[in-house]
Image 1 (cartoon, helix red, strand yellow):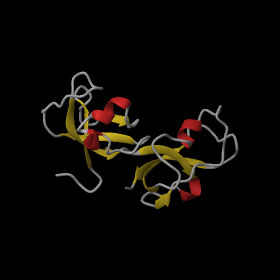
Image 2: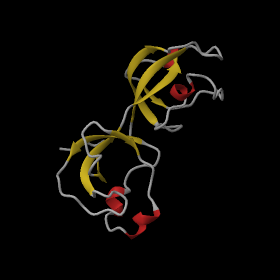
Image 3: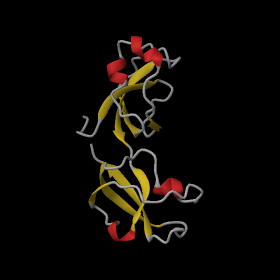
Length: 151
């Protein structure tokens, strides 16, 4: 049975595997004419999702996926990010804020500015993973955390 954080959607049958994560990129022009559009396009563009259950093997025709689509349950996948060490407390509920840093050449930039999370998202710090792999070039004291994004 699906919990409150689960969404039922359709995905290409070749991709339908429990544990698969994907970034929802939104619709294409071919989606406009499809009568299953409301089921496929019920995810939020730019979010990373994880398939938690493949519901059945009924394959529906799709103009995008050559092998059709099938029904799956998905949840918003956890996101690994950096966080100020003083705020990195497991179980804490936060509103996500990106650090004030535009050092795009920094090796840690992608962890400090992760995909799949948006400014102001309600999150729970699911796990404090530990120290960052490198020191911040701006001198911030950072920890690596796993964020559970709340819906």
